[in-house]
Length: 313
Ligand code: DON
Image (cartoon, rainbow, N blue to C red; front, top):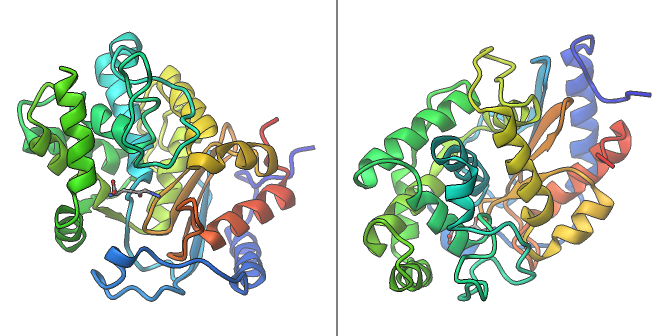
């Protein structure tokens, strides 16, 4: 029996359920917000927002839903989708693999075959960003912002404060990009590519916009709010596959078993999940666990997965 919300679901009932989930999960202890982002936008570490958008376009949000936050590593999944759509599967797979790395997101290693393990760790995300068509940093970001906005059904932009904080501590990402450049994998210089990658991480969304992005992926690439086809079906299939196997870093296996929803987390405390053919879910709460995933975000997804029987297997 289908228990998840669909177009017959009253959005007010959904909001009441999300409010219940927020109250249930709010008390979850532990985790620390990322130190370098703590004061860039005056964010309260206990901010908490949740939204859903069904593939029929029914939307609901609760908590601090009007606040904007940076996509951070959630952007890696979206950029991977754009790269696949613009370049095709084979050219992308020649540059980045689809294997879980089992290591931290910013690990300074490449797979033995010379490619980054997957597009959702930093080495692979930097590589994937470089595959976005465009002669320079600005052109790549223009295309990405257009596609991100199409997915969110809203005009999105880069937070300069977040980007400045990122640029001030980019050494490790520069190291990864230089490794890729040394292996002749980058079409542009490492510093340019890293600046673009960090700009994509600094794109701001509200929780409802993030849920719409996730719902577009869950709906096979058609945005259920705008009605526009943004991504092809094979692209979202490939994107959800890496979200499922690699989206929660070195906690991805446990997540797949317990929550069972293709998802992607970010250091801002953002979390996006796509349940194919059903709905997109987004949460934002800045306290992170040891693997860099939002502590309350995990609680929200565990609860919604159980409540609405969302495990995809
Ligand atoms: O590459 C970085 O350092 C960040 N801008 C993105 C990292 C991130 O979100 C990792 N996530 N949990």
